[in-house]
Image 1: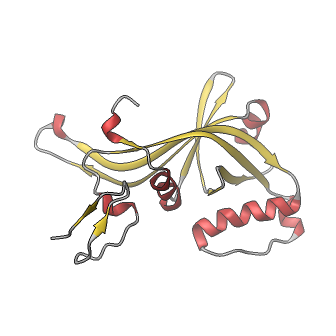
Image 2: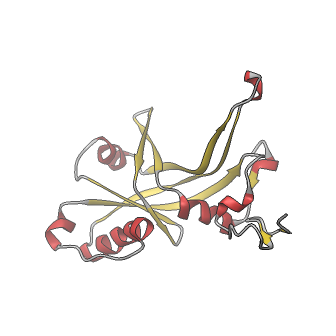
Length: 179
């Protein structure tokens, strides 16, 4: 990463960004042309999961090329300034690369869908066999991922206690007292 002062190296913080993100953007390559699509997702054990209809552009591309890039971000805030060259954005993000595979086993599909639903609903569900047969589930084995934060990102927003009177630890592990 060119701007090393913005790099997030703590794997716990990277996973916190993944936990808090609500949308994942999947980057695919369609015969030399980029294609990016937002998806609902779940993440567990170095694997990203998302679902789809059984046909469509995304499915066609993945059948031809299993390489995937993904991006998530949290705490995005535009920071206006008096000078146009001083405008900025506050954020934390994760970008990763991996290889996609289709989950065909119905029991594995149900587990993958529960990983997605636990991400959004915080609980597991039962799925009728017919529903499982009619959905495509994609599993991305993550090969690598990096995190990045804007220089002005407030560490507390990465998921630590927001009690203004408590002693805090930022996501990178350094302690500080609240004022």
